[in-house]
Image (tube, rainbow, N blue to C red; front, top):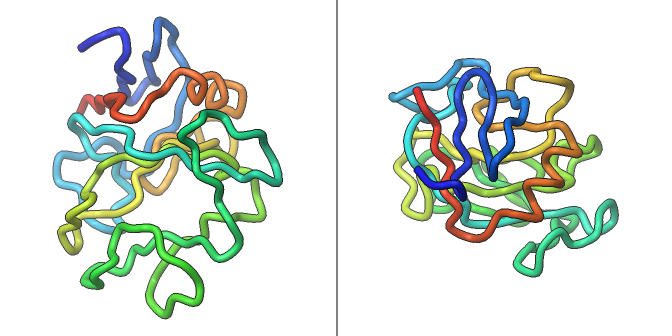
Length: 165
């Protein structure tokens, strides 16, 4: 591990010399991730993208991409675009990236089961804002808004996310 890694445990996160409170999936940390299990997959993952709501926050980094109306994420296991960004209208199972709540005002996209997604292995392991302190996610890693914004200013493409299980 290096000082530039984000290390996730069930107790929180170590990143860039700080300890941050964080939430993980309601299924805990798992070594056998499956679609819909609520688990956060153990292992070494990389940050591959940063998305943000330009109507709510300023671009957090030069490489961040805006979340626009109609932006979705496919969780339709078995479809060719499973675990990829898609656009509405999309007839298969998906998650809206442009949410009414602030959870996805800024999102870090990991390489979990991406870009070559294996059906049923799980989709969309993001880093995003939490619903409330330490409230479990569907498998993502979530932070308080201030801590997430602090992270966004330090992360670069390829930053390692190490989930210890």
